[in-house]
Image (cartoon, rainbow, N blue to C red; front, side, top):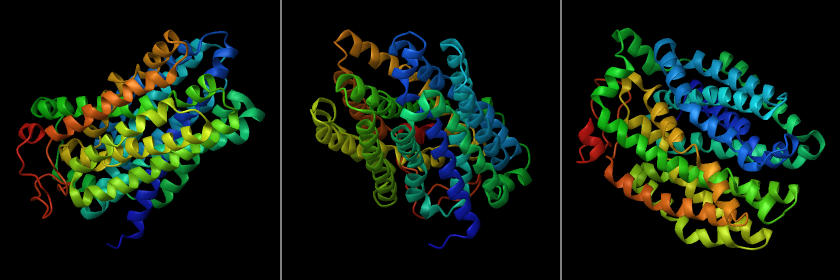
Length: 418
């Protein structure tokens, strides 16, 4: 299917927005040890910054999602990018752990808005049959940002230190210039504006409460799956295996390549076999990979295990942008998917601190802590996704008829909620 130049620009901008947002977030996971040393505290205390970032993301999803539903996706996306870039820069000037925690909390608010606004803009702008593969590409922005942070860590950390790492976080603000010049507003949002007033998010949540509860629980499991396999992995390699900065960077680059591959492959596969089957298949791959990923010795086996694990994790995640947008009420699409996603983040926000505490109490055994979380949530996701409906190809405008290839007639918890 041929895309227009404008559709390609929207897709590129949304992918880069999520990539650079993730880049700014993941810079933090590489310098937990450095920050703890600088402020004379334990790594467990520094992980609170990750918890606060994740916990404040729902607030950003609500604030910026409602702004995008009211004023348009494009201007709010630009505002998001400028804010999270400036807050990452400011983190490099923190003079105390408390100041850093405040800045990372505000960063979480800015970060929380980007995904919902960017994914709504993309899914409303591209052809329906392209949503699966674009979902995988869009979600691949997350590991792409992690990969970019890995490269910066390996190349520059020893020269510029943890403060310099954060200061590089201002670079994503340049993306706003591309968006302003090349990205049009969502055609679905513009049609909605002509149709009249939109309902409040509270009215929609009251009407769709069963759907909202289901999606929040699902996204809680998904966020434990991603953050439970990513956030503490560099610390696991540095502290438990005592690997060098460059080796940790190389392993992080390796597993993020796996994550990108997984997201795109399973996103595209979901267009053929359905969103739910693709998610369940990807999630269950994690189970046989667990021993190699968490308990292997030596950098090469660990890299192979991490590569395969992230194919599983981001393979499942690669379907999520399309799946959540297709399930969401069209009149609040910039708010609803981002809000349930980030509320799931809130409920899973204690992951890093939980894993660090378990590891600390067991002789710094981060591998065991991560394996417990990853194994449980892989099974939970495969069960939960079976309870939801299949909405592949769902129209993106209110009042439209069902798309020819949509499987929206299946009885399900989520389907009944609609």
